[in-house]
View (tube, one colour):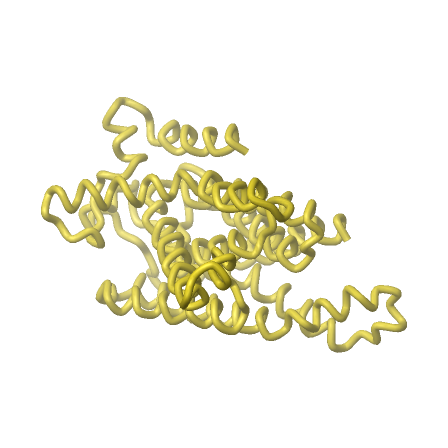
Length: 325
């Protein structure tokens, strides 16, 4: 099963690459560009299509839906993997809800890329998608609160929705330079993939492998200088899926030490987008600016102002993420 999960990255890579190549042609034909200077924080060389999220989404959704459907077509007794097929069938509801949430956020992002939506609308849609996954797929953080506190289950749900929304927006905001969000996301996906494989969590490992594959495929077009951006239609999906994978992954055995490890590991793995989110929101609030209005005060922008090239500003946090891994 380890090799099967790893192999899932290949079709995801191909689908994402083909989808991105197609969207590059379609966008060029129909003028679906992200123009430099159209907003204060958009400073790139010339118009670049921002429809790469289509390749990212379909590279994850199509193989995931195919696997969930295949589990119901196979006869467990004839496969020699009855336990695995039964496990896949048990994941059908959660997987279907996850796919629906990813598609919903993709649509919201695509609309926002063409005609900016109010921040409140985007936040509401993210919260609803997060609540659906938390409720129907039982994707919760700090489940130990269930027995530790009165109302612990409800508190766990609220914190889970908050976690998913925060990470979703962190990757959305990190998508401010060529290759940055996708590069950091690919490294995080690889770490979660390794952890899930070690824990024998095949569905989680498969989802992480699919995400890793699509991001590598997308980076073929987004590596500096980028010919294609993921747009909100891709960054919202990237952050959302990573946040869910982070919650679902088992990092350590049961016990006090294991609980601390499980709590800290996703925070360390996602430290770069979390730091960028917290720091830029803090800066904007101190300047009495709305935290959701884009500018050039992100971590990567500050590195450029210190004298680094844009490529180095992307490579530095990506390399640090790799070193931590």
